[in-house]
Length: 99
Image 1 (tube, rainbow, N blue to C red):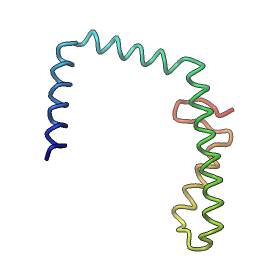
Image 2: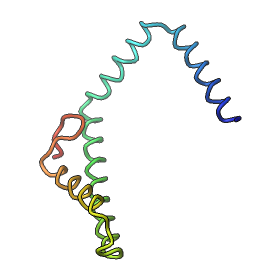
Image 3: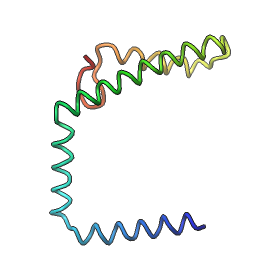
């Protein structure tokens, strides 16, 4: 109950502060986020982090599949396989290639 009350209080506080800041501040924050997300250094960092995540997922899949063997559900194997294939010459969610 305490966590629910804290959440509601935080939600109310955020609403009050948000309405006081107004639309102008919202647009300013939105513009800042857009500029940061379009920065080439940020995009390259996101791309390299995504590629490293795919590499680690592939290694984890191989080590788990060796221990689990044929007991690996097909849905899990298919999902990892699709993620691995997506990482090769594909665009990520940012619309950039993983080079």
